Amino acid sequence: MERIISYEELPKSKGQSIYLRMESDPRLYISLLSKGYRIVNNITEANESTIYVTGRRQDYQCSSYGEYKKLIDSKIQDYLRTYDIVKPKTSSFRYLDLVNHKYKVPFVLKNENQNGGREKFLINTIEDYEHLISACEFLIYDKEILQGSSSLDKKRQIDYLRYLESNFTIQEYINTPTEYNTTVRLLTSSSNDLLYGALKYNETEEYKDDTTLLGYLLSEVFPLSTKSIVSNTLRGGENILLCENDYSSFERMMLNHHNINSEQFHELVSASQFVHEQFKSELGIICGFDYIYDQERKQWFLLEYHSRPMVGDYSRRQGIAYQTNEERLSAEGRVRATALSLELRKH
Image (tube, rainbow, N blue to C red; front, side, top):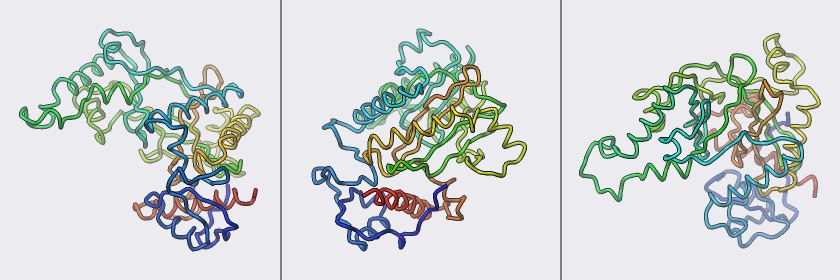
């Protein structure tokens, strides 16, 4: 695990150009200026030597971030495929396919644009399927009731059909080892370093989510009979830091069930580093890869990548506060500063 540096430890500039949006990391922005770096906040001013601290989001002349993300997702999957790592079978969500019962249970309904484990639902039974139809119908046809008035200007209301079909995917359900929901998060840097790795696990408690309207409906109004599939530590989960030497018997059991410390897992780490290195810093100076292990096929699958991953577990392990918004901004800025210092060693 790489030690997270302070802002004061950032090396001085040797003429490098840094792409960074001030609003995303204000303290890092100021620290870079004080060290003499040339800050680029307009993508058109970047050049081949520019280091993208917060990611090159306006590349390839895409018309929207959604279009850009699809293109990047496709490239990442192409790179990982050379390591025999693929995403679970995934298709776009279509409301008419849902109501015509075109999907086979079990499956996961997943909002690709939500973080923190929000709007990820396991549809495991026919009853769950019918409840999902009811929840979607309620959103699409009864939104005026939900907003407390039938006289609201319809132009100001959310088009829930469009929201569902433009954000959600249908993904095959991966049955993980043990009784816990588990994923592995690998945090890489563009310098081809692994900053942090952890096996995340959470008990399969009853699904509860009132942070979004669909989550509330499937928790309280048309409740799912199945369990939550979220391993995120924000939802009460725990994590086991990888590459440690002193594990409890429980931790060793969890790691063994996931085939960690095997040659297969080392390939997973190498693949993550390779992908980030191929993009140089265009994904951002740090990147989070989330993987899930299928206990039946004995195979790792890519769930998603994050160009702005949360670094709470990584920071807290080094005694860095990560509670308030100000603390999170500072910790995330310091992690990017750490990755930048590693990148600069290569030049």
